[in-house]
Image: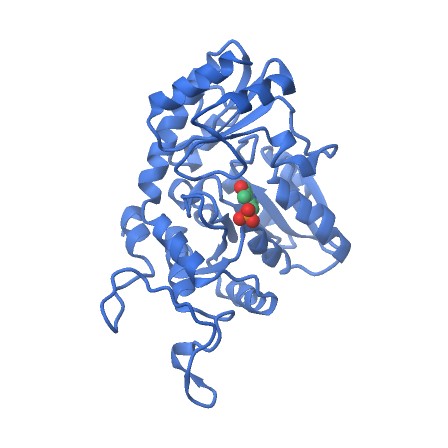
Length: 380
Ligand SMILES: *Cc1c(COP(=O)(O)O)cnc(C)c1O
């Protein structure tokens, strides 16, 4: 079946007991057992397995073209659980422009447990090849990145990484692209991670995370960790994400259509020095983006010629774009990463240009969005 159909039906069937069309919210922590040690359909305790969560997990697996999905209470919980696949002493290579919270988890938390990290420019396959060490057990890629929107060729990276004698795991954070735009497992990745808080949920009303894999042995290890560590989402949150996913393809097409127009507008504006949008003609990895993504997505970053003060003025002057962190909802958001979402990277090699503004372009009317940006830029 095609993506649009899977988004609505995968993992979900009318309830066999009463025909409920929407997946019920199984708001229960435990399940009655018919005999000692004989749970019905494997359900015994909701940290281990819950029917609403299972519907979401199976839906996510289908959308990514994987075999198994796992849902978590946040994107960071998903990331943390994946990193527990490798033992202390291992080396992890990561992109030098990963999400600020991912950098913080790696640098400030996991280093203390004996993992070592290198943050490198994964957009260059030669750098990827040169950065693998005999201790490398996992490679963490994000593409497009947050907030620079740089693109890594997933297939090229996968070939290099899988040729390495250690067989490090290749993990791709696919939050920005969503499974509608890009399927890293098909391009050679072993594991896909999502913050379902963003486009998958799509309505800025839930925090969640997910992991999708194709191999049974990796799934078994992750399912063990999911239960042993316990960072699982509640059934209501799973329901909200399932519901959001039903309109994902429609929303992503509209996000991308709006964003492409805004990127053109910004590129021609005299107060803007640089625009970053994956499908924009000036993007340094445009051909890779077009090869592995269906459209350019809904995120735009741009740099104000006059730096931080101008960026702060613009972000404070929009009326329709709400000044807020996060992204991927139906409504448009604006933020200044160096002072907000990416504050944790200040002073590090991942520090962001203080004049950079990030837009999460919503699905409102394009002309209203253009007018709002135009008046806000006029105040900088
Ligand atoms: C938001 C985000 C995360 C973290 O997800 P949470 O749900 O906020 O924990 C990870 N990666 C990317 C690319 C993100 O945008």
